[in-house]
Amino acid sequence: MATVDVINGDSISTLHSDIIQTQILTRLDGPTLASTATTSSYLQTLCTEEKLWQELSIATWPAINDPRVVRAISSFPSGYRSFFADSYPFTEHTWQSEKHDPPTGLISAVDLYYRGEIIYSKIQEMETEKGKSGWFLSSPFRVDILDPKESVQTRIRYPGGDYEAWVKDMEESMRLNWILIDPIKKRAANISSRKAVSARRNWLTGDLEIRFSTIVTAAAAEVAAVVSCGSAEAWKEVDEEVGGEIHVRDVRLQVEDIEGKCMKGRDSLVILQGLLEGKRSCKDDEERRAKERYEEYVRMKIQWRENKERKEKAQDTICMIFGFSLFVLLWSFILLR
Image (tube, rainbow, N blue to C red; front, side, top):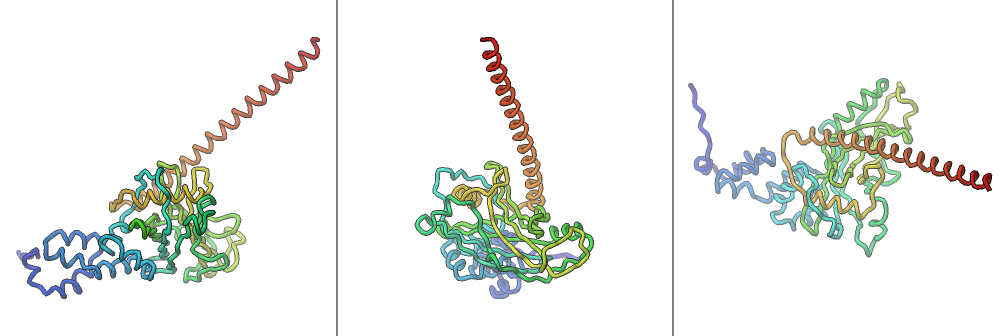
């Protein structure tokens, strides 16, 4: 039987470091590279090279190859290695930040994919400082990546015919990375669900809205990155037969409460800060769990709405009975005088 020699730290140290770095380590993904660094002190030195993590990070999130982001990442404790460790895992809102001021100067790095091919990338800075734009903290929170009249042409086509099948295909084919970077506290987090959690038609605009949401259960809130797609002309009918090229019309971030209303800037930034400071998880089933959490949250919203309607009906009934009782009492008093 043939035997296979296991390459350990001692045997691999006989290879030239350039060969290891250019031919072996560059082929590894982030988690594997981090695990490799723990096998020996020699590999740890090679695996912690800043250039290696920089190339890996840019290959994973092309949008971060921007001077503003490069400056921000250079201030992280271990540079791109710290940035990757923050951004690659899924994040969970676990940090209690209610007593702290909301973060300022956040940067968004957005990459949108269709069937593994990138179709849009952009960097967006949030003007959250009180002195520059205090209205941001008291207004409904929304970050628009595209300008109002801007749209992105793609190679995606709507074939016509079965609209629902196309919607399902779009939900399965689209991926979004939304990296939120805090240059001051030197933290970053991918606040997108990566894979879409829902796709449905906006009956007002006719566009298809695809959601990449992270649910913050403790705050009963949804951090929603929404991508709107439409044709050159708005859909006239759900079952229209005419196909055409699809444009990306809108890419936005908003934080919604359980009623579906956009939360104000201050409250939204506190929630985002909780995600930046929260726990990280690299489990294989995190994308599936993200969708399950979203579906559970949707059921919770429906139940909350039903409970609210029942309470309102009960209050209306009590008011009617009270009003009728007053009416009867008043006329009884008048007639019996």
